[in-house]
Image (tube, rainbow, N blue to C red; front, top):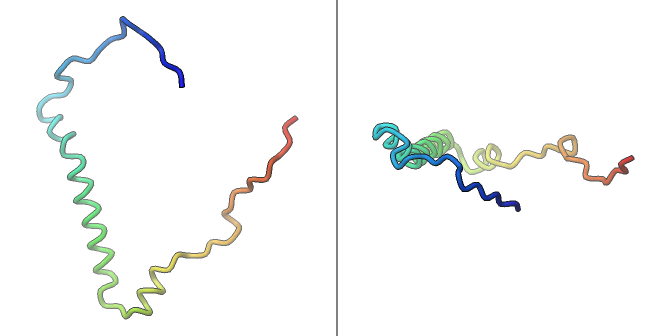
Length: 78
């Protein structure tokens, strides 16, 4: 890691954003949590009327095979 010392670098003021914009920035975490909750509720509702066998079938992790594996074989560089 490299650190640069720049004593005369420009600095942001104490009030960079307007009050309204800062309020929106502060809401970011709550908005993310609300969105994730709604996605989870939607996913749960889509499985609500299914029996356990259908739920297992739909939620099983897919097997994508070797076509998507990254070849990590070392190669010689010239």
